[in-house]
Every structure is written in structure tokens, then in C-alpha cells.
Image 1 (cartoon, rainbow, N blue to C red):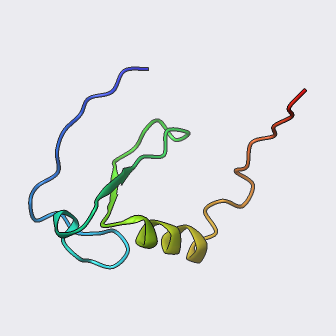
Image 2: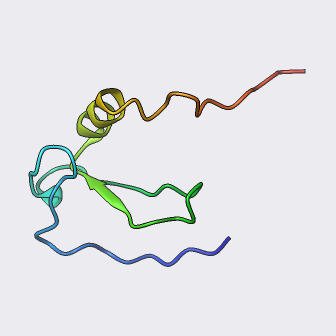
Image 3: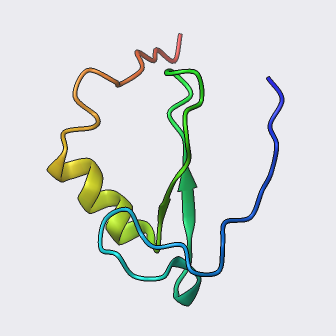
Length: 68
């Protein structure tokens, strides 16, 4: 899988709280199970975590892992 890196605009805002992402520690997230759709930007891990919790984004998405 190849990826193209493009920086967002300086005015890009957080998908969760609406703050400008570059005033914080930005994170870019893509859903690559859905053909790597448009990126969503978050200003920090707290906003990403809150978005995940509030929208039940992990329900049914856990990988099965066995150390054996």
C-alpha cells in the first residue's frame, strides 16, 4: 500500500473540538478499511480519544491476538 503525504492547511481545525490543529500536537487519522477515505485531523490525543469513545468507533473493531 502506498501513501501520499500532504500537510493540511494552517487553518485546519480539529474534527472533535474545532480548535486549530497546529496550535497543539496534531494527529491525522484515516479509515483504511474503507478505501483510505479522507483524513480526519485532531488537535491532540485527548480529542481523538473522546471522539472514539463518544462515537463507539472501537465496537467490533478489535483484532484477535494470541501469543501462541
